Amino acid sequence: MPAAPYGRGGTATTSEHSIGDTPPAENRQLVFVVPCGRAKLDTPAPARSLYIGQMFRYCFATAEREAVLAASAGATTKVLILSARYGLLDPDTEIEPYEQTMTSASAVDAHRLADQFATVLAGYDTEVVVFLPKAYLVRLRDAVALIRRRHGHKVSLRDAYQTAPGIGYQRQVLAALRRSQSLRSGHGR
Image 1 (cartoon, rainbow, N blue to C red):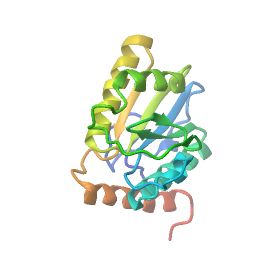
Image 2 (tube, one colour; image 1 turned 180 degrees about the vertical axis):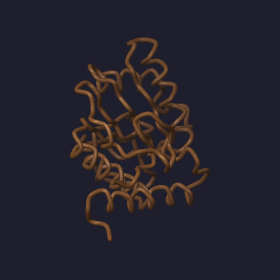
Image 3 (cartoon, rainbow, N blue to C red; image 1 turned 60 degrees about the vertical axis):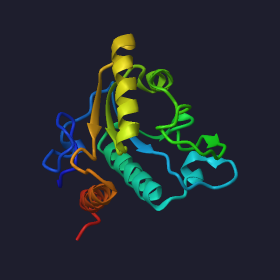
């Protein structure tokens, strides 16, 4: 089975085993987190539809496909969108358009993210695979640290872009993952 760019026990590298190599524990889940996007519709819509930029669409579709593949291997999965205004969003949550970045003073803080994420994590040991730019990743790491201190949840964070310093490299990571998804799903060459 071709490798995914992250694994249950490793860091974000292309040499790790794929998600389905070991059977998932009953109380284990895999959560994929993608960033919101700058380009948005100008009317309220579900988060998955509100963000209309090419990078968001590509990243979100890749994460959703990865979740489907992991679920078919027996894992409990979830895909979330990290919004600078709203925090962690279920893709089907309807939201208003906004103009805000994670570096703005009014952006969602780590405490609010920790509160939101704690409800997602309840009862599970969780591996969180993130496809986030640096400012978003730092905020989510801070939230995970708070969750560990407050609730004692077992949470591991895997940065899919760990070796991708810019958007061009991030697109390469996504393209490689998409190719491996095709092979892992049996639809490859």
